Length: 539
View: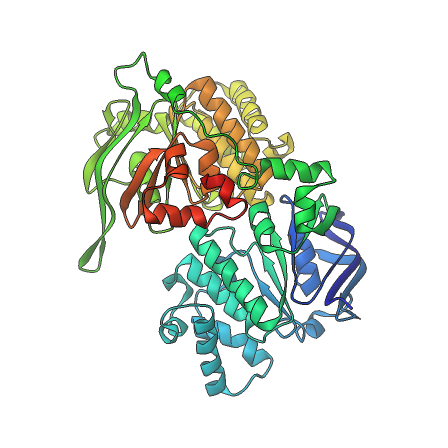
């Protein structure tokens, strides 16, 4: 008997008196100790499937038909109250976003201990000891201190470990991991996935892994389910599906996954030719950049002596873990932060000097695409107004011209025209990021600073955006400063790379040089942590 068996599951959401079918008659099973990965794009139904299994659909969601058999018992029709006996005790959940999944006003210890209290796992002292044991087990340093801290005092990787501690507190038979590493750096991602593997080996726990990262699925799962538009395209042993995919959609996903099908390195010679008619071949020159932040009485140096040059019409990537200083460096280039010392010049202009109208024109030449589109898009505006706003601000065209330009940009970033009347909250995370890119392109900038601009996108959409950026660069001679923790994407899009660690650049070179013959131990560590066919990436 399978630990979990899903038979003919159909799930719908009701909006505006209409039912939208998100999952349509799917069936699969998970065996004890097995990792089954569900992969697919946003809207494929993979997260809805996971939430339906554990009874955590939103209020407008419902299981219409089908069975969810847990150890042979159908729990599909159970009430929320009855399902509380299953959650945590038999099935644990590792949610996607640790920032929104943890209560900001409760300590870490209180939140880890909650599942133990719900299932009456001992008195207060026993629960406190168990909390420290769990935080130790998931690799948090100084667990007694962490138990007294609040979520904002921990890094993203630490918060994700807390969620794992909550999920394993009652040693459940099944863990549902819903995109557990999508926002993490590759080295932190590897540690988290290693931790889940260790726990599975120790306790015999089965894992239902929901992910859009085929590299992670290829490396970590025994079986693979490929979903599209609420249906299963194909399923089977992971190695067999990846080696001999039967569905065209699966083949497309594999072609688009940079960690599984790496493209040839780009040639930086193309970039040098782009600037041959200008006084300097460099669009961006950073010299000895330093940025300090005052924390109490002690200054913290986030960026320390960073220098690099970006050839006109090329893409230069800054890579490194969270806290390496790469985003702070990008913000200084875009003049959203002022260096403590050092300089940045864009096409010969020192970006620290412009004021007034000169600064306003600099904003047109250098556009920044933020990491988190949810925080950069006005929730009160329609998508059409958001993309048109830069055109209005710079008075670039009339109303009819703005409408045509907006529609063209929406097409370019692979969004349907129907999104124009919607608000950001009505779009998926990947769709919101495409809107942010469209808005940045609206004023025809010369330099685009892309801060993790494709990290939230599914592989197929990601490939479309990367192809779009590459095509625009070749057509318009755009220069990109590309900030990313995803080295497989960096390999695909960049001409040159700087590797940052603790505010310093530890290695710089062409992408081919850095990937094939890394000189620094930290660079080698980053490359070794990339999931998927690592040998193809570094050789």
